[in-house]
Length: 301
Image (cartoon, rainbow, N blue to C red; front, side, top):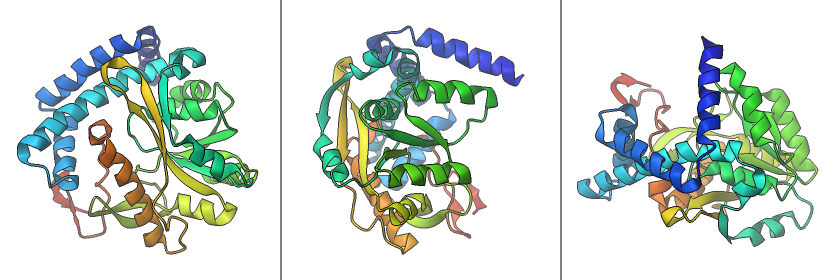
């Protein structure tokens, strides 16, 4: 059954990979509108997250934001097959503008390693491809639930020589070595971490489980850290790669201070283009003991 599911998914990716960007975004928009209109989980979670994270918005404004966010999520879903199936040069041709790339050159100038934090904002697959085309880079990943899919995923993500590193002990040792050599590491920082490497820190005002990996890597290797994302431009015109400074304190030995600084850095990126964030992810599901799970009010964490 698992292999059958893999062949179905792989077949869909290859078919969708034949689309143009404009066609993929049009279809993705329809998928997003369907998620917004139907009583499905992504719509429910998006509404809950927006109410928690952007309480300053009026109810009509939040409803409009939910619709726009799910449209962007639908577009991201249809863009990923392009990033995985298109030739690399064609993917990189979608980058029309860049902002803040000089920050990377400054960070690497003294031979230090660099950690690039890429939240689930805009098109994170294109961001990874863009930077792996320019730097010696490794990217941290969690194995997919479908084991047969792992080889395909690592192959397409590593087309430019980017090294895919599993988020286990062996992988983290390799990541540390790459940073000590002055390389670049890409990490998705806004996922609920597994294992013991976490602390509870505020994210849009709510205490949630947050990875401590970034601060530990900075302390062990002397690496610097920056934020990045690939912003979707209007009317299918492509993307803008944005690089930003992080909030101070991310390398603190105080795990709460470090994770708070990281979450604040993610928030600043999201507030620039909140409609392009993946709001349907249950980011708030892991909270301190005794707190209510916002996605299931009958359950206490």
